View 1 (cartoon, rainbow, N blue to C red):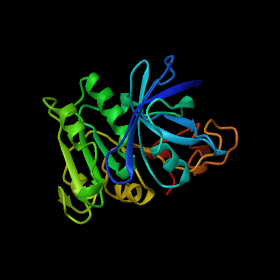
View 2: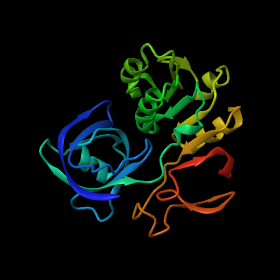
View 3: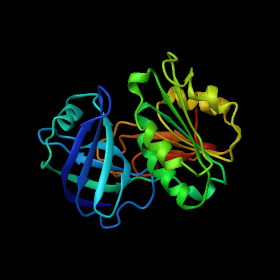
View 4: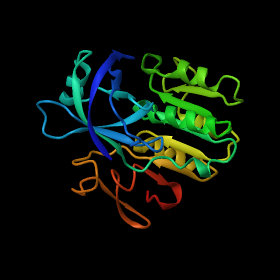
Length: 248
């Protein structure tokens, strides 16, 4: 973990309530795996806001976040040139060593962004990932084109599902998953989606949990959940947990 100041170079809407923010600053190698997150100090708010990392380079961070309260409203209104204090490289990311050759990545809503960095990592390793993106309506779809570009020529495929059928397959991510052949799964999204995947998936996998956090680095114990191996802190021991240890 490092703490540094980052400057906003871009902050724009992808949908009515989902924004992409690009920040510039020294990462110093803090991010070592896709699925890790940052904790942003938003001026005027006591607690930092944890946001998963969508993509990164040596000196840039791409964050995609949903406006769900006053803190993220303030983020969405932040102009280019503003600076934030960030804790970077938090959490336990995805383990790509377990993926096999043809993993599937399953994202629901604002759980989609960390899978982009994961997809890039798997492609660098010569894997052939496929991606399922789940949304409620076509108006909520984002990152579809970016994933299509990323997967071009790799042998992997992208699938979109919407609950109302206005884009892609009508229904849920599991309506696509049940008909796919895959070696392993990775997923990030809401708990109801996780339970549906748990009832459908036929391989091992990893879940990236979304949980309210206080400190973001394991001191306050506020985001602890029960697992088969005892209590674990989503911010420190997670947010990624293997399927075999999750208690439903």
